[in-house]
Amino acid sequence: MASYLLAHDLGTSGNKATLYSTEGKLIKSITYNYGLKVSPGSRAEQDPMDWWRAVCESTKALTETVDPSQIAAVSFSGQMMGCVCVDKDGEPLRDAMIWADMRSTEQERMIRERIDGMEFYKTTGHRISPSYSATKLMWVKDNQPEIYQKTYKMLNAKDFIILKLTGNFVTEPSDASATCLLDLNTQTWSDKIIKVCGLDRSKLPDILRSIDVAGTVTPAASAACGLRVGTPVVCGGGDGVCAAVGTGAVDVGRAYLSLGTSSWISYASKTPVCDENMTNFNFAHIVPGLVTPCGTMQCGGGSLSWAVEQLCKFDRVWKDKAEKAKFYDSVCEAVEKSPVGAKGLLFLPYLLGERSPRWNEKAKGSFVGLTLEHTTGDMLRAVMEGVAMNLALILDVYQKEGADIKNLVLMGGGARNAVWRQILADVLGVSIEMPNFLEEATSMGAAITAGVGIGAFSDFNVIDKFLKTETIYTPTPKNELIYKDMKEKFDICYFSLEKMFDLLYNIH
Image 1 (cartoon, rainbow, N blue to C red):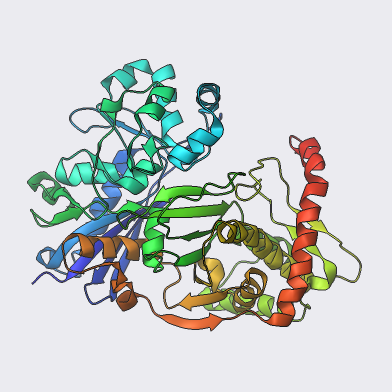
Image 2: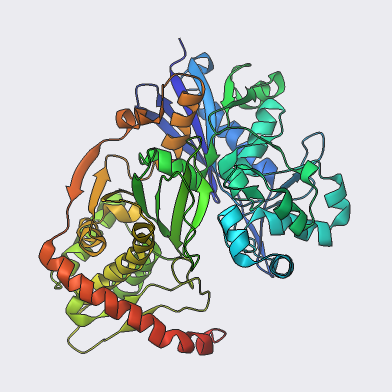
């Protein structure tokens, strides 16, 4: 009897293929890397066939571990907000414009002239931005009309792989919501937004549910990747949304915090959160009928990596992982010696500008309050606290909008830092749960979606079979009081420096 689930996580640098048992055990994982084409004008592209080759090679490698007949289903988490133009035969007409491609600023301007920004936000769940698929397809129409005319469907990364496996042109709500062409309230394509963008609705694929079987593996696909002919292919979802499933945020109010290079807080909700400052954005959830409000800061874990690199590492090359781990333990020890509040030192974590909560690409990273008294440990603590205080602003919006969030499941590389986990609990004022898997949330979410899709699992609460809480960090009342004062000063610092950020924006 088939007893394994195959999850492909199509990221920016490569595809991570992971095999799980239906009992919740991670069997084996393998990553196949591919390239990224970056060029002037904020252009970032990838060859969709590189994704397909990565899926094929990683699948073949995993089928050396288990017989393909034992794989019950395959599903995906994938990079979002892309634009893959394919013809009627499913062949790519050009390289894919990925999420990082920001060339379509003129198309963004056109949308702003045609619709009120708040109406757009309340319809799609997102601000008007060149980040999303809509403006990218508009750019193709305006600059490569011959390709636009030949485009049968616009797909996203995992949709393209589903097409290669099954021959079907489909998407699902999470990726559809990342195009900014979906009405998030009805989870159907928005005729009004499509008209505002000047696009042809027929070029958009049919929307299935994330848990629906999109089709089965064809003989041609089987020959290419090694999966058994007829293996069910479940739609899956966008990577950021699969992470919600993989951290257990599958019931209303359940939330998680991702502490990777960029960092975010998200939770499961019945309705989108559209606050007056458009602080956060919203995607459709993998769980049918739900949405995931999300507030993402540009440089969360990335801020600490930068600080450690510049203040401590001095171009050191690690002999092995154990030596690197030992070094980071010493970093934690230095932070622990610094008092809560880092002796009054504040850090604004805007090393890459900022999305949530500031939405200011001109913002800069800043240490405020440095004195001769401050040590390296103080500076590192200030970085951790600054990231936490920025995340607290995002959480505050959710709580003001009625979300009852009392705990956050932690994921991402930064979650390995025990000192930071306690700082997050104290600054955010909620319990921080550390699970047994910190960097498998997206693939785990895809695998669970596959299991629900084929009926191997009755619902998404099966996550409790996959994910276990190892440690819980609760707020320390004394520290909470200190951070309450620090958070007010943190906000004042940002607004005091806002004009200076404008002056420094184009200085290198």
